[in-house]
Length: 351
Image 1 (cartoon, rainbow, N blue to C red):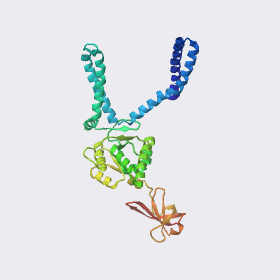
Image 2 (tube, helix red, strand yellow):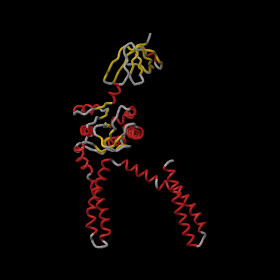
Image 3 (cartoon, rainbow, N blue to C red):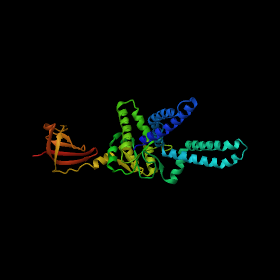
Image 4 (tube, rainbow, N blue to C red):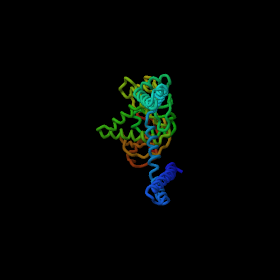
């Protein structure tokens, strides 16, 4: 049975009892039949409890849990520490306050508990960045928020760059299980993505919106957790530089398609996972002499050449294939070239 159904049943019982008791009291006041009032008000209570109970129990609880999940872990940690410290101070001050003459000795301890608890939470919330920066080098970890599991991460995650989020292939890679650690998205990367999505240029705006949609899909469907962290790097303004410094602090790699970020990170000793290099590495290897069935879709640069593509995007240049456009032909591989843009296959018509 679902929680919604159970809450409706319990609400029916509770509201029927309360309304029945109210009907009995009302019958005694107006002089009517107690049994009739009790049954009538009890049925009204059953109806109200059946309809309204989930909206006063289940729905607020789910909204509260959703709100708690959206709070960054380091902020929640700072608030809890502040609350504990404030309550400890309130407990120490409660005894001397209780010795004051009445009525001050009765209500001042409660007011002190509320005041010190709120003060502890407020102070730790305002100084949460300083607290995390103070604890991070000693704990060797970073507090982050996971979509389903808040925990300390130390070197087992990967940082996502804006370019790789917009690219979109990280979603398919995460489903394969090749990435074991959580996908960490710093808040400054999310801000840059939001800035791209708000661009006045239509192409950039569409790319940014696609990246935001990808993050939402990763949070729902990814086999590895995706974590949003508010951790920032003081004194650094460029997003790429922040990613490199943060990766060095967390001792984790960076996933990117940005050539410049790739080279800068490698020079500073940061491990870089480039999706383009991964795509080139996992493409099937075809040796000269193998036969391929290729659909020729356009003419090549040279006279008589036709061009087709394999399923993985590898371009195949077919000699004397210009007159076979929109046809699937049997070819024999003659040469394979590895270029900066990827692998290129040259083939001739079979027979």
